[in-house]
Length: 65
Image 1: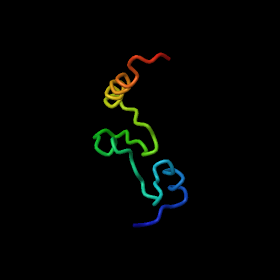
Image 2: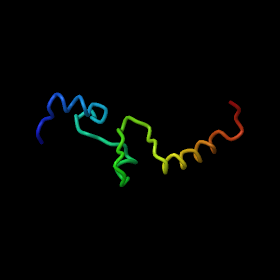
Image 3: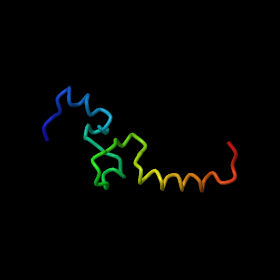
């Protein structure tokens, strides 16, 4: 596998893991959309957001903010 140039490494720094390989979020790897996100980020996708809201609402039932 060829080495990355310094410029390319800087561009992809958010996506590089400890072995300097480009890594996407686990949910994004399975998704067919082109909006791939880094493994370091919290996924923000309309389909995933609905399911996440349901999970959060179950966790915080009865608590006050």
